[in-house]
Every structure is written in structure tokens, then in C-alpha cells.
Image 1 (cartoon, helix red, strand yellow):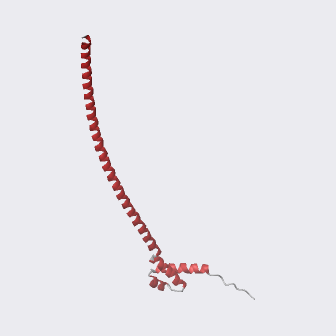
Image 2 (cartoon, one colour; image 1 turned 60 degrees about the vertical axis):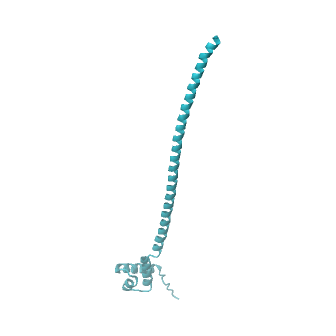
Image 3 (cartoon, one colour; image 1 turned 135 degrees about the horizontal axis):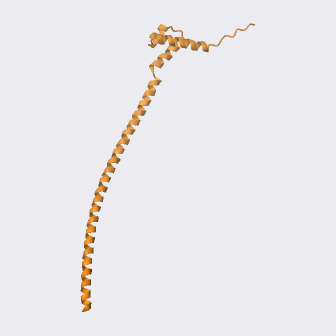
Length: 141
């Protein structure tokens, strides 16, 4: 009977300990489930944010490429304008006319330039011609 008395309180302690352990496990599992739900919600939110950022980055990339294309197009247009600049053509034409013997008035009307511009082109072209002229060699025989 001594065995039965000692065993009964021991069984009671073990039973209480087991119930306490099961309750602790249940509480821990419930907490883990709540943490898991929060983490899943956070992962979903971050995934949506990542997708939004990814789409906006793609959109920005397209817009930047459009700006680069427009810039390249404008750069080509500016180069064409510089190559075909009517003012440059007028001055070149005026210089050519001066070399052919045109007067200042003829330059003004033919090239649509002002009198000071025509006089300047005439003077510069004549000065350049004088530098290019090769002196005639006079030899005595």
C-alpha cells in the first residue's frame, strides 16, 4: 500500500505537468500561427510594393529612352540646321561674288545682307586674295 500512496501523488504531479506542458504547447502554436499570418501579410505587401516599383521602373526606363531618342533627333536636326545655315551660305556666296568682282550693292541685293556685312565680306575676301596672289617673276633676258 505504501507503493500506491507514493505512486498516486507522483501520478498527480505528472498529470498536472503534462496538462501544463500541453497548454504551453497550445499557446506557443497559437502565437506561431499569428506570427506566421503577420509574416505572410508582410510578404504579400512587400511583393505588391516590389511589383509596383518594378512596373514604375520599366515605365521610367521607357520614358528615359523616349527622351534620349528625342534628344538624338533634335541633335541631328541642329546639326542639319548648322550645315544648311542660310547665313553661312550667304557669306560663302558673297565671298564667291566678291572674287568674281561684285560690288557692295550687288552683294547686298544678291545675298540679303546689310551694307556693313557686305563691306566686311568684301574687305576680308579681297585681303585673303591679296595674300594668295603669287607675285609675278620678272626676269630679264
